[in-house]
Image (cartoon, rainbow over all chains, first blue to last red; front, side, top):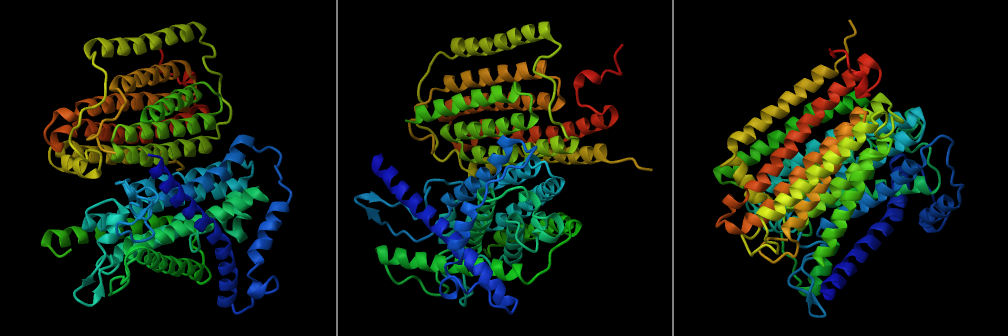
Length: 350
Length: 167
Length: 115
């Protein structure tokens, strides 16, 4: 039993290390990427191409004064950033990130490159934990004793629960065609080709579901064009107005961690996970596992860049437009995708 | 090992149930209930019902309690009357009644079903979504469709009750 | 985790927990004056009932031959969760209306219909 625990602990440590080091890299990508899109330079003084900028940012955030404004409800104020980080780190344990073809470590089978291999309700677990992320926003807004923070908190939570529905319905089509809730089986169902020339990724037959899911993930992670809860020009900083230094760092980190999980979900559910487009991974064993991890990482990296790209290209939605889009457009489109997959399955095409 | 996890989840459940009932701050009550639901989901998972554990967290913690939080924020409820205030005798009688109900359940359970012990090997994969989905759409189809109507009725009802009469 | 392996939790312990939670919920409903707190205690009671269903589903799942017969306990828990969601929505709407009328959700003040 202790060998199993050790294998899970190593996988968990690896996943946490990768996630926590990706956050500073994303900070750099965001700042240089936004500069590229806006035709300016971006940070280029600290280290080559400004690569040490995130390090300096962390030092700055750590050494800032840790304020606690007067009138805040202390317990809830301190709990909110803790929930934010804990939730965003906990969702990744059900995501498979490499191919496992029966590998074993010191006699103990690796059992899939996923931290929780026997969780046969994989994607429901991710949605369950992600739905708890609303609490960090709501508590931050409420405990801050600040009207603007409260508005930001309420808007963010209303947005989150509205788009959660669209996100869940958009995935149901994939669940029906793959026949399982386990993400590893969803990825395994996306090998091979479709009609001979398209890779068998779920984005091609279920394009509507993929688009709905991606838009919903943008809304869930509070990224532009859905970032009204933290709109700088309107609400100061939204629900995290009253936080400084480590509290703000926690919310900032949790936003990027949510982005990583969202990008991984898009990759795994709709874009084939670690499968290469037309060919199978030629290696076997550990080389194959590492190669597949590289393929997965490059796809996730592309979607993270896509998040940054969209942020600096599109303007922000107004709040009523945002809610109307969530309830009156996204949910019907997701249901349409679900019906389309149902008809396809009944006729034997999927 | 699993027994210890169950005992920890049970202890957490009881502690946070008391924290839901006794403290005066409504936010603390709601957050304790979130932890209670989480420990209930853990107990469901220990008993082999994975799908229900996930549904418990998604529906109860992730939706119903967020609704409670919204209402508390909307009505701006800060501090409320203390537990059992103004009802001294009722407090005593109420606690005795509750203890009596609890003891009764325990005694009935102990007398009618005296066997304790582990569950026997049974149908595999009973906790996934597949058997529940099949049952909902075949044996329990009428109840499933009726629940849909109940939910629609509750949506329409709450929207109607919550509307503002400005004119 | 499937029930096809021996799981060392006696189902009577789960029933005992359900009884304790139910008792705590009853105390909450009887003794709190705040409407929201009464509602939360009600949710504790519903969950205790769910736990009782789960205990019996867990104990008697082994006696059935097919999954279709053994799943009834879990289906009932599912329905209880759905009904609790519907009732929470309507109940909270009612509390909002009460607050608009009386500017307080103290249930002791909702006494207009008394004899």
